[in-house]
Length: 69
Image (cartoon, one colour):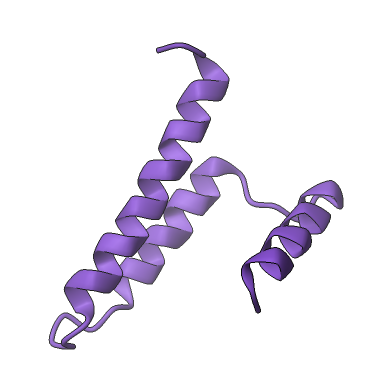
């Protein structure tokens, strides 16, 4: 799936009420991190990418609650 397909599918899912709440999204990211194998050579990279995704979600959520903070 390319970037355009991801965006289009995500928008369609959101419009149809199929998105997660921010709290559920953080829980899911935590599950994904927990499922990573710490002995795998790409562990640090994959965990960092998931944490960066969580940081993006946090920023978006924060900006919706208190814009300009």
